[in-house]
Image 1 (cartoon, rainbow, N blue to C red):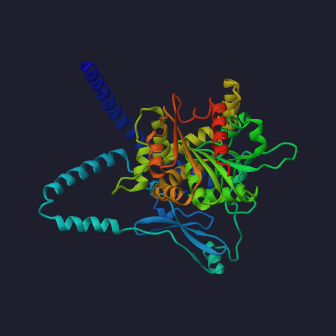
Image 2: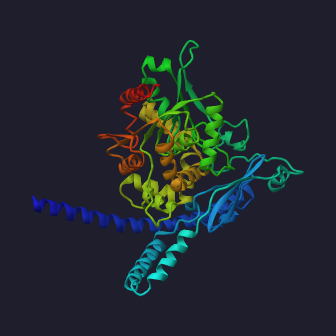
Image 3: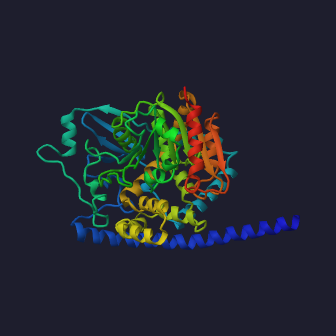
Length: 490
């Protein structure tokens, strides 16, 4: 028995070493490729649009100013967006992972230097304890707060450059699709007639639902993740009692994909409020959210603590940040570890680390999504899979890139506070569901949520992964949701 265990350990060690070596070579090549594509896109963008377009890999964050009145500024070494509205000027965080993603070679070099310094400091710790403590205190003191303050509307107009001018409506970029579904992004993200697409199922024959349920999908998905799987499998009783509302998030599916948006947490939440809660006059509701949608669900729950009846989170991306680590960068490395295996980790790493490679993927896939959808329908002849792939194809690089960084990575410093608020200020039931074979987000994410919210019930679904916790077991999942909602009736 001991010999077999030793052999398995040796094989696992060899596998890790091979994975590390191959990953280093592959991602070093991708680092170089992304630099080359950066130059290519600058030339093509200028040729197609007569304008040099800044990008995060080669421009200062201060240069990333868009046409909506959002201005990027620096504060205490970090970056914030100055967000202008009709009566207020607001500062909100964006993730530094947008513009700070070191190459693998430079990161390995820095790690080596840091390790050598750590060894040197340990040797001299007994001789310089006071200096070390002062250095640590200096690091901890560097912090900033997000603030909101009122400013005269005339000054806001001056800052936006609107006095004597007119509001511009950006057109789709040459690398994005221009079909009727996708061109809804030509409206500014702040316009009142710009609403998210929402699919609402209520009681038949004009009946009035007793309760509302909001469904929020995950990254590069759409409302079809729910409407084509779970919705048809609810019982007649549930259909008569609940109004089921599934929303396409800003930048995805049939929702607007504005070019002027940075897809921050605030923008996503405000669009859900305007497009669902206000539009459908929702006063209290249950929330069901998958993956990235879990972050938005928590933000909504904290904002409406008395309105949420139950909170069901599927594979929530929660990574407790160790003391001394920068949260955004820590989460980036957990979500996208820059490894070629498993395959999903490789895909996530390419999407997170490489702005121009991921834009190329969108150019090939999303710009031509109508052709891919036709081909996929012909090959699979499966309604559920076809609709899921349509949701995967229908987004822009701008939407995917900013949502990925500003929501998943950028929320690293907020999630602890959200979870604490759910624990202390909300009385709703919390259920967390995770697939045992999930290779996108580890089981520890759900258990860590339970550590923050002890009353949360964690359900591990055997033999299922990040997607099949719903797709393929939709009937069972529909019954589970009905049971959760039934138990929360007051």
